[in-house]
Amino acid sequence: MILIVDFGGETVNLIAKRIRDAGVFTQIVPHTEVMEAVEQYHPNGVILTGDLEKGSDDEPAIDQRVYELGVPVLGIGYAMKRMAMDLGGSVEESENLEYEPVDTTFDNQSRMLKHMDVQSLTWMSRGYSVTRVPEGFIAIAATEHLPTVAMEDSTRELYAIQFHPEVESTSQGKDILERFLFKVVRMEPNWTMASIAKEKIEEIKARVGDKKALCALSGGVDSSVAALLVHQAIGKNLTCVFVDHGLMRKQEGDEVMEKYGKYFDMNIIRVDAKERFLTKLKGVTDPEQKRKIIGEEFIRIFEEESRKLGDIDFLVQGTIYSDVVESGTGSSQIIKSHHNVGGLPEEMGFELIEPLRTLYKDEVRTLGEEIGLEHDFVWRQPFPGPGLAIRVLGEVTEEKLDILREADAIFREEIAKAGLKEKIWQYFAILPNIRSVGVKEGGRSYTHAIALRAVHSSDGMTSDWARIPYDVLEKISSRIVTEIPDVNRVMLDITTKPPSTIEWE
Ligand code: XMP
Image 1 (cartoon, rainbow, N blue to C red):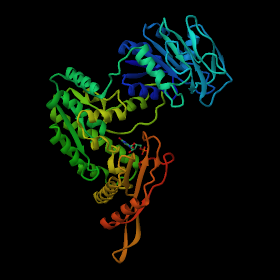
Image 2 (cartoon, rainbow, N blue to C red; image 1 turned 30 degrees about the horizontal axis):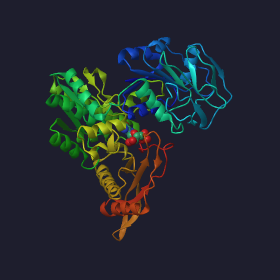
Image 3 (cartoon, rainbow, N blue to C red; image 1 turned 180 degrees about the horizontal axis):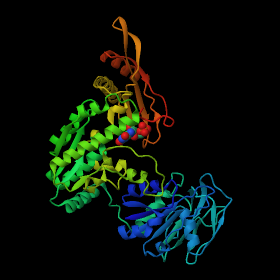
Image 4 (cartoon, rainbow, N blue to C red; image 1 turned 135 degrees about the vertical axis):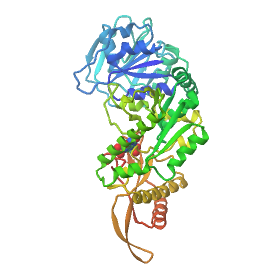
């Protein structure tokens, strides 16, 4: 594997992605934990990377033993400056701040840049210039203003580039990264989903043996893929608990049960907790309070079920890599945490199995397809843990949930018919809890309004509203007001996130 050591900045995830896409397994660790990580992973090669904020005085250091590992080390961006300073070169502040791709000349006889075109564009990490390379190194690339934008010591297997190979604007970036992976480190591109699935299944088998495991299944992609993987490893020794809180979309609960019970022959307990949740939610209108109540009730039910089963040693969770990164294990900023079935309390006394902890969302999806989950199921849109309770504004009642479910089903059906299903990140209906006056069947009506929300996003952190063609919207609107007696008005939400959020509560 390749260890990526993170000095901060925004590009680290993209580098990891590029390396994984090339078929090589990689993990990101903070620069402060490099030697522990080396011990844990025994990497074949190490990439040090990061960018400092403009004007930052804080120049993070690194354990000097990283340069003596005996495996190839590549420094990128700020890490080239770090390497040059640590090993005795000279570095100066540079006024030549390049804000666009810059013409760069490569020494294509060097080990790192062999066979590259001699001249191409690169996107430079700004603010410094290596004016003298450390002893043992040679300069292997330059621009008009910067004499050394890449350097190598092929005896000690230390390499560095000031520019970013992972961005599109560095035209030979992909070739350079692949050269490092396959020719310098001599990796094989064998990190495929088939090999990962096989490896994970073997690992879980060895770890769990004849013991028993429990999994909270939400119907979402992550918990589904985690459950299926563990099921393929230990079969009937896995029991899944699917808490049907009555806040799912139309027919969703049945679909989940059918898929896993019949199709995969898994042990699943469906806990029909609709009444329990609705009773707890009675009279509650505050969004945060709703979320809290649902989260807590979920945990209580899960605890009760696991007590009934007894004799369970492992708990399976669908934690994925972005959950790990977003909760701040790396140097990257903490962004946000959501309530979902992944957040069961630790004091339940189980050992955790988190087979997707090293994978990104799209990798989880590919893995899901690899182990036999059908395409449609794998590519379902994200659905929040608290379900429709945060799409019915104000008090949640069965009557309002039913209206919303029907409207949402029509919306989804028409989007599918229009061939837009996989083109929109998320699309759903909201019941804003307002009534308005209308005319229906020749008389006055005073019934609910429905809002439609459809957004494009790549990670849910920001979003833009989807421009659904007018004729598709027309069909959706007319079907909703015709087919649902209690709705006489349809609205479209045309706000971006920020300042809105994707969900209304
Ligand atoms: P917001 O509304 O914060 O949503 O813009 C961003 C993304 O997260 C989903 N979401 C949740 N997912 N538990 C989840 O598992 C939650 O409590 C939750 N709240 C929002 C939302 O659907 C969107 O994809």
